[in-house]
Every structure is written in structure tokens, then in C-alpha cells.
Image 1 (cartoon, rainbow over the protein chains, first blue to last red):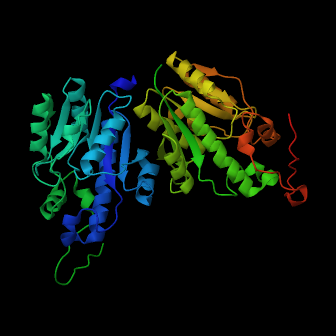
Image 2: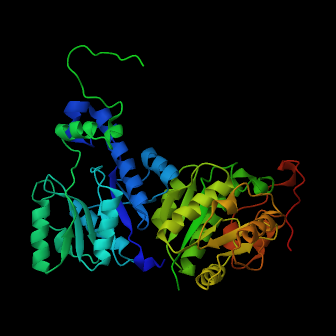
Image 3: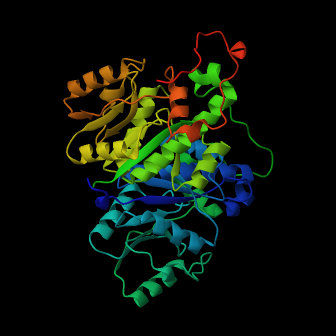
Length: 227
Length: 230
């Protein structure tokens, strides 16, 4: 196995501070449980990336890696831990992929909001790049993407992208057409952002364990289950 | 040459817990200072070897300002060591490195005599088809070890007593049928006379700068002799 055949993977993660992660689920779950869910999704993503076994797995953290949550993931799963640095999301993505491409022919970047992303998706993405595509994506149902893979960094893919809207994937496609790039899109997955996503997660036979003991906030008197 | 990832195993430099054999000689703070400098020196050695990415593997946690400082000062990444005995931690470290790199070297920081050229020779040996390559220390422990594949059999319940490590390790390698290269052994800082040797070495004396042997009357009565040159 030579280095060139390896595909490094960066995972973007935030310090799990209540009130700053999974904010759209806070009205439904409360900020503590939303934070637990965020942590579980992040751990799940690191495990998925390791299971894919296509190259080194790096957890890129913001604003710092010096947090017990990252320390704990580090101790159990041993990803490389790096800091994202400053700048908007596009700049940070660009810088991360640039760093991964030093010494490697291709690299992947994934978020930690998309537990429906599978190890098989990651392997397919690595293969799509090895097969000669300039880029590969796993689009999400909300118009974004959960995974980007590239072989060379091109700033226009990351500059002035309307990141918080449903036009991320479409804008990125336009940019790639302008660049005359070839790209592959893998099956669409779904992010866990909104209350309806959480209900979908709870009902998912493979992923429902991520919701264990994170029940929805109920109005009226609570029932206490005796187990 | 094939890329070789280098992991430096490091502990949080809490005085009293690191470089303990030197505490009777230079005090707990002096020993901690030496530990920090030797770790920094090990990182510089690994970077200078220029054989692949350099990682600092932290224990028991990376939540320490020294590790943050090292990550800021050098182009290295941090990882956290797992729990378990040294053998299991080594196994997991090699396993993690080899999932992302074709060959890997793991080293400590107690052997400032280890040079970039030693690391390069180990990396070359691995590229040339050796399964393992290592640099022993004079007391029979290991200063640095390189592998291009890993097996739990090699590390499980291995003896880590000084004087027996290399013997036990080579016996295991023979059992699993791996080819290995053993480089000449080096002196280390924790052995008697190690500190004096460090202070007297023109290339390494800066590591001992302003770390002084404490007065004999203040030493703990554990038989440690005042440092004398080799």
C-alpha cells in the first residue's frame, strides 16, 4: 500500500457547547439533549470514516481541539486531531482539503450532521476519485452536501457559496461546470437538523440508537418509565 | 522513499510523574523541565528526519498547555493514547498509524541521542522489505521502533522490564516469522550518568540548561549517585 492510493478523510466538528450545536432541535429537545445528539452523531461519523478504511481519519475541530469531548474521541478511536483555524465555512473547508492534499492525490471532507452517510458511501467516493473524476459528492435532501471529495483545490468551489441555504449543491454544480470538471454524485442522504429529521432518526432501524434516552420534550405531566 | 509516519509518545509533564528516575538528582520540577525539552527535541528530530508526518500521542489526555504549545510551535498533529498497558497502547498506535500510512515509527523522548539519521535508516529498512526495525537503548529497552504491519501477537503481554524488552520483542518477531533490523544501541537519559552525559554533550547540553543537580543533603536517600561523566 503506497501513500498515493490512500484517501485521507477530514471530519468537521464543533466544540459541543449547549446552545451552539443542533440549534434547530433545541425547541424540541432542549439544548442539553441537542448537544448529546450532536456528540453522538460526531462519534458515529468518526466510526463510519474508520470503518470505510480508505485512509487516515482526521477530526478537524473548531474553535479549539482542547475540549474533553475531543479528548475522549481521541482516546477511544485515535483520529488525528486538528484545529480548523479562522475564516468562514468555505475558507475553512478549502484550507482543510488543501492540507490533506499535501502528500495525497485525493481527499474527502465530511460533516458530522449526516449519520445516514455510510462507510460504503465513503468507499464509493474514494473509488470515484481514483477512477478519474475531479470531484465527488454525497448530496443531501436539503440542497447541501454531506461529503465532498476532490483531487485538487479550486477556490471557486468554496468562495461565495450560500452555505446556509438550499442552493449549496446547485451553486457548486454551476461552479464545476464553469471549471469544466467531471464529477460524480452518490445517492442522496439526509442531515439531522430539524425536528422532523429527529423523528426520522428515531424511526430508523439502524440509526435509532443515536436517539436513546434523548426523548422529545413533552408538554403536560411526564410519565416515568420503570425499567 | 515510502512515507513513514512518526508518532512520539508523550505524557503530560506534571512534576513528580515524569522522568522519575532523575527526580532524586534534579528535583521534580527539574525532571519535568527535562521531560518537556526532551519531548520538544524528539519532535525536532522527527521533523528533521523528513520521512513523513509527525504526530504527538498524548497521555493521559491532550488537555494540557504543553501539548497545545507543541502543536502551535511545530507542524505536527495531536492524537490521544488509549488506556491499557504499554503493549496495548503501542499496538493501537501502530494500528492507527498503519491504517493511514504504509509504514510507521513510534518513539519515546528519553533518548536524546537518537538522531534524524537513525529514523531515516529505519524508514529505509522498512522500504527495503524489513517488517520491523528498531533502535535499542543500552538498558535493553527500545528508543524507537518501526513497523510496516502490525499484529496483536507481537505486543500482547510483552515484558517491559528494562534489560528484557529487546530480547522479548525479538523472540516474538521470530515466532511470527518477521524479518527485522536492529540498529546499534544508544544511551538514554534515565540511566545512571545519563544527565551528566546530556550536560557534557556539546550538541545536547542546551537541554540541560539551568537544570541543576540539587544538593546531596536534599536528595532522597534512594542511592542515586551524583552525576559523573562517562
